[in-house]
Length: 68
Image 1 (tube, helix red, strand yellow):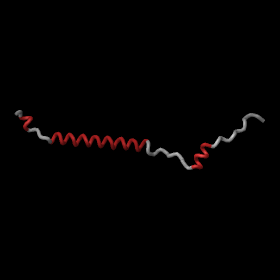
Image 2 (image 1 turned 180 degrees about the vertical axis):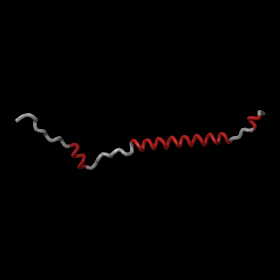
Image 3 (image 1 turned 180 degrees about the horizontal axis):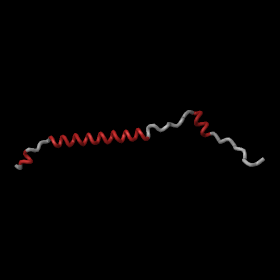
Image 4 (image 1 turned 90 degrees about the vertical axis):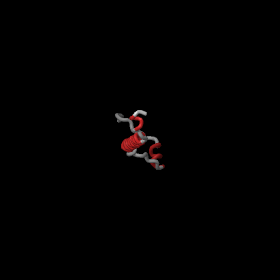
């Protein structure tokens, strides 16, 4: 049996698995932080019935400009 195979143990695979999970967790945390910074602070629309009625109401007629 070659010397490099005899000295290998399952530890490097365990370390690689741990590093992979850490990298994935950090990427998820970074994406969540980016989402929170860009999308979470957006103002929510006013959904009260009065606000909706005001938005859906017809516009007030404006007098024609330039006619005496």
